[in-house]
Length: 217
Length: 281
Image (tube, rainbow over all chains, first blue to last red; front, side, top):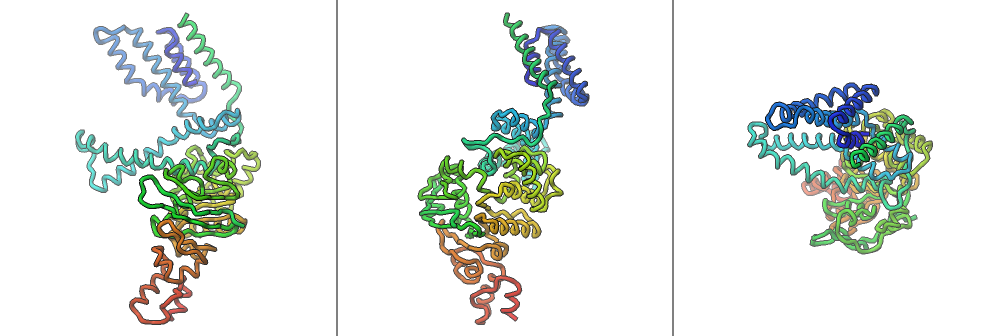
């Protein structure tokens, strides 16, 4: 759905298409009871909206308010769909849905593990920061000091992460993941993917196809 | 019965001047705890990696000789397929052994059986059994990323114990554990051996492994230099000569023997407090 929203944002005719799309996405998100996601996305988009207005309306040579509205609506629709995905994404349910359909597990695992890696990397980065501070590294005093601190902070993070890859790979292999003769994974819970979800996905795909066809005609 | 057979196995890492494993020939039995011991760099971890089929595949380098585990060759794709789910590998850093996708400890433990396509009812029963066995039932709904190092290591052990593997390969598994966690881990190792599994553990902790292991293999420069019953080897001087450490009580007795001329301080050294008190009182 999120990918479909992004595709529709750039294929629907401007400015009415992106505006209707944004309104539709916000409505769906509100109906799903995730008003917070719509609010967060709007707050995130505020700066860009302001910048677009400045660029197209206030400054000379701009393309006018229609362009600002169309581009702002595209950003708003994509941001709302993305924040909603982040708010509601359940890794286990996602993997179970994949397993239940008998689809290859490895790509789904790769995607979810990548998403889940962010908090671990953040924790590791703050640990490295504390360790380097204890060893006399000074950060935050001036822009120059911040730039100087990048190498001692990022290099251990990067090297440590690379060094961990093999350990993690062999641990996962010993737990039945990977190998050429993989078994079909057992879903741990019934898939929460309802008929309405399926209908929405197919509806979005059809809308993208139709918008593309109209645009190319 | 031999679960693992090594025939003149050597392994040299890329650009290394010497072999990390140098012509090792061994039979490792099922139903016993086999302890690999040696100074850092002696080759214990490399031997575990080679047994699991991970070295040189992940580490680089070249392996010579022949390894058979449960009748299969872990160095080949076919062998690894035959061993899938039958070999547990546990390292000292539990955070690196997590699936990275489980929201709860229950899901973390269910990860391996689900990957192997077990029926869901079997998964539920097995996970519940192992939660009780490892004493971590109270953690089942917690997020693995929010656990302490000791709790996490128990979860990692449970996550492979659930498969009831035929071979355990453990590399310094007790490093992150407190005394209670260590005792529980060693209980699991012993009970797995009694169940019939071959438990191979690499550790420098002679005080902890001495009473647990059935067999001690000491490595030095990638070669087997001692092989026997832990109590016999640890109470003599040979283990120290091989660059490995003995128990704290044996160490005290050795050092005292250099200071006090007393026949009571010569080998065999005491390996625990009770024996030390008897010997020295």
